[in-house]
Length: 354
Ligand SMILES: Cc1ncc(COP(=O)(O)O)c(C=O)c1O
Image 1 (spheres, rainbow, N blue to C red):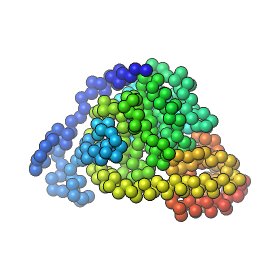
Image 2 (image 1 turned 90 degrees about the vertical axis):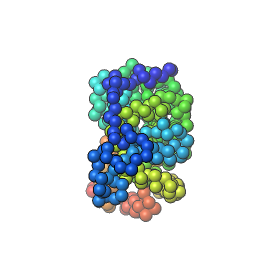
Image 3 (image 1 turned 90 degrees about the horizontal axis):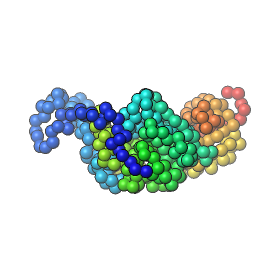
Image 4 (image 1 turned 180 degrees about the vertical axis):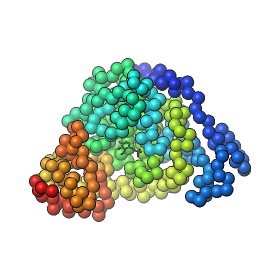
């Protein structure tokens, strides 16, 4: 299906004259900066923090581009990938008129962001295998449908979506397909970044919050065509990623060997935890996971949750989420944390009144 980006953009965004910051207006060599009303004397927080950060995060994008094999113009850096989700609504969805499609059970922020932006959400639940129902989704598309969110590996189910389903949906939909790959580093699958040239309507989201271990810094990424990224840069707040976050991520990229070790260890621990969970008769289903968590259906999720809290262990009770009835989501911890969880589970007595 033909894809006309221009026709998808909200009228006010098309007309928008973006804010021009001091740091983006001057490019070149200078020694005295009297252009941004900063504190010229310094900062109690550390060297350089008295200055505004690079609004377009050029150094960071350069390193990410090398790592991911894309052009820097295809990268958006945000205050978490949640910022990218919100920006996509603001660029493409007319409040009170347009709609988006989500496939529950999935990451809750797509709906929250839609609600904040007054965008109608059409839900097309995943199948019993937690896969996309492509024909149903495509038949639910209306002229007002601007965004389809796909999370792969999906939160909270942990599985990857069938690649051919995602591609066929992107090929047949004339709006934007957002593929959220927050957990891709734990998965036995390639990122959809490699498909961006063939699929100009796809936006791939990734984050430094999960495998990269920097949730506290709030840095997320979107990969897409240079045209879509340019729109995101126009709409974002000028200094959306702090200097400390940009610097820390650049340093972490240099030490990425450590991240690879943690990913391998997380996958080993995921397998070990799954093997241990199989031994408990209160565990009914362990869903296959390509992420750093497992979704587990148990005989009494509320009781198990409350018991674990008493043991000072917090998991996520997902039993009130549609299609996840009776489930808890367990993040893979360190070896010691997982041992502590397993031994607490060994002491859990089904049906005990807590
Ligand atoms: C699927 C998914 N996408 C995005 C996010 C948010 O990522 P960030 O920390 O980059 O905002 C999460 C966080 O849990 C997530 O599970």
